[in-house]
Image 1 (cartoon, rainbow, N blue to C red):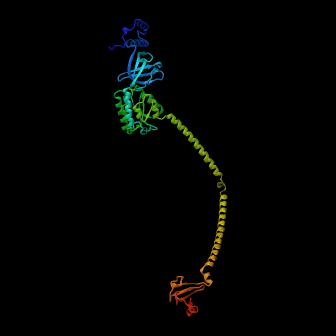
Image 2 (image 1 turned 30 degrees about the vertical axis):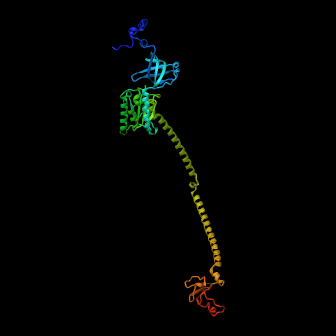
Image 3 (image 1 turned 60 degrees about the vertical axis):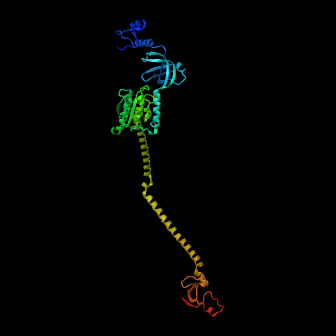
Length: 442
């Protein structure tokens, strides 16, 4: 038989009769009576002052501090009231190794034993916190946390794979949220351990399987989740095997591990991090009711727009119907015919004026050309001479004796034979000079 955590024989004598006198219902003890027994047993078994060393976990509080200290085998809940917390010089946070001094007591309201801290002495970072920091540094250098490598979530998912424990409350939160917001969504559960030695391997295998079969099954996204807990409870989501599976997954992953104050490696690598399973489901699936309201609003706007367009078109149609083209088409035709006739008359007149102006210009140019033309010059007693090749002669030396030349006058041409060249100089009155100019007139 397992030994009880307290020895009934060590209870004080005044206490036993009081408990016995208050028992009812065939000797059954009340919860308060059992709590009193536990409290007395703890007070009798534990020293009044205890010094404990451990790693801080789940630290919460501003004035009063509520946290746990742990090692690799056990966890102890602690409370440090504001009067003590104000005396601690170094900041206390998760992962810090501390030595605390205080006493053990049973807290009847919540039904657990906790350590009431009288003194806190920070020592340093705990091994789990250091291991987590080293892994985060390695993954950051490999680009596991880069935003540009994260996948976009589908706008209207039809099938979502949920990687979590079947017995966890997180699964029920996801089911309730998705069924309320997006009733047509299909959820595929991949039941895995979410804490313990085998959890990381199962989670990594599940994500890898989903990535390989997503196209065949039609999975649009993955929701990786579990409830809150200490860093030991969540440690499976800080393993490298899980980070690798998430990073290489071909479908987007939304991770909701623990609560807002807890951040795991899986959440940092995932395409989107949410504080709770409910928020993860809300981020992953749209709200059907909100979409229906939006569609209704768009329908109203479209109806109003069509009504305005129809009214405007009717106004234009009425204006066209009132136009004279449809009321008196013959009047428009007659007006156009008269306009065409006037244009023809203007064209004829313009053409006549243009021809007359051009004739006057031609006559003026003809008179000007006649005044400076060769015939006018020849008429004034001038002539010009052509050689045998009908080329104008400019110099007397260009011809020789015996060559035939032609002299052009205003009324005809005279052909002559050269008797002397330009090199000979004949005296005035020489007989040959009297013979020059004789020739055939043609």
